[in-house]
Image (cartoon, rainbow, N blue to C red; front, side):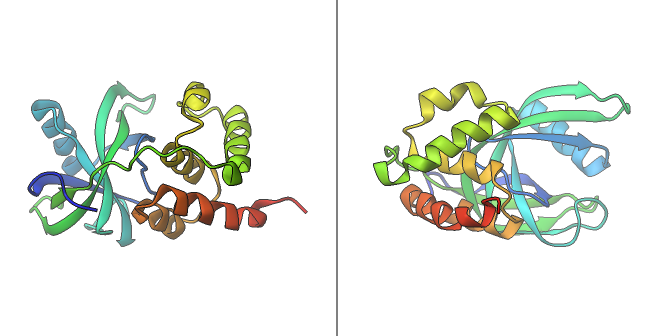
Length: 200
C-alpha cells in the first residue's frame, strides 16, 4: 500500500483489540496522557491512531503498538455514569507507523504514513454466504452500522471488515485481516475459518 501523504505526527492509542476502517470504538478515558490526547484532537480537529498492543497493557506503562493501525476520529464525547470521560470514535484510513516515541507523561506518539483506501469491489457470488452471515449477525448483535448493511452488502472491503468485528477472531487474527490489502483475499480467509464457528 502506498502512502498518500508525508508521514504525520499523531498520538497513538494502543489497545488490546483492533479498529477497522468504518468501525466504531467506545473508550473510557481516565489516564492524563489520554485526556491530553482527547484535548489535542478536539483542538486540532485531527484524529489519533489506534494500534493493537504487541507487548504491555492498555493502562500503566507505555505499551508497544503494532506497526499497522487505523486512524480514529472522535465523533462524540460524554460523561459516563462513573463520572469519567467517554468518547466514541470512528475508524478511517489504515496507516503504517514509521517511527514511535514516548513523551514524559507516557503518551505514545508516532509518525504515520496513511494507506490508500481499498478499491471498492463487489462481493463475488462465491462469497455470498458471508454476506448472509453478516446480515444475520447484524440482526442479532445490533452494531451501530446495522442499518447500512443493505446498502453496503456488495462492497467486499466493507463486508470483510464488518465480519472481522463480529466474528470471534482473536486479536492477532484481526491484525492480520487489517493488514491484508486485498478485500477478496480477506473474504476468502474468512470463509475458510467459518467452520471453526459452526455449532456442533
